[in-house]
Image 1 (cartoon, rainbow, N blue to C red):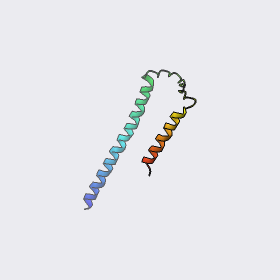
Image 2: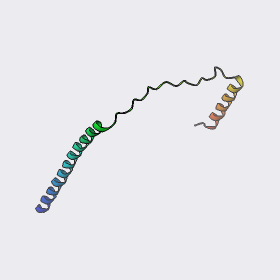
Image 3: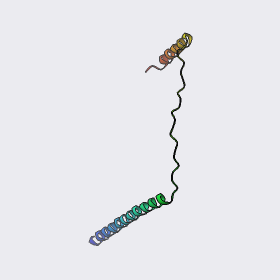
Image 4: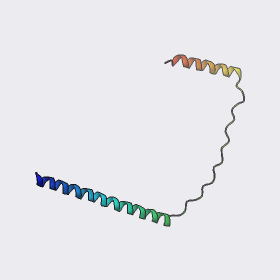
Length: 83
């Protein structure tokens, strides 16, 4: 049993060591690629400033017939969808 535990610990250390070394290599490779991209990539084109869009104007007032139709539609909807 002692030999089995020794092999398990050796395997665990080897696996964790491999992952650690791989992550260190990955960090350096990512940093190197970042530096290369910054050096050789063309600069980003300047984006023009956004101009605010004009909001559509709502009618100043609603005629009484339309207002009454809206009120009836709301009342009908509420009566059908009571909780």
